Image (cartoon, rainbow, N blue to C red; front, side, top):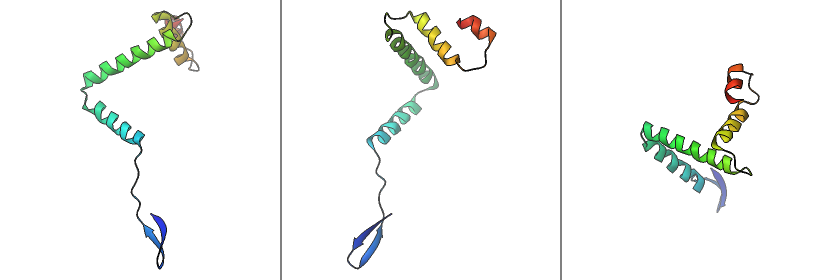
Length: 92
């Protein structure tokens, strides 16, 4: 509600909610993901993970090997967690 001045005084007027372009795009993206089968969602998640690993790998100079990039990301993910000898042996 908002208050506007009209002849005879102030009047409360209803205001429609304004949706942003970002809100609309988020809703469309959510609907597209919900339309996918579970197998397609898993495939998409794996594809996005591979893409992000490649971006991280190539952002270093010289570019890291795929294995080294994955190892560094795993170390970063584990930083600050309770130490685990098993994980330490796996990721170095």
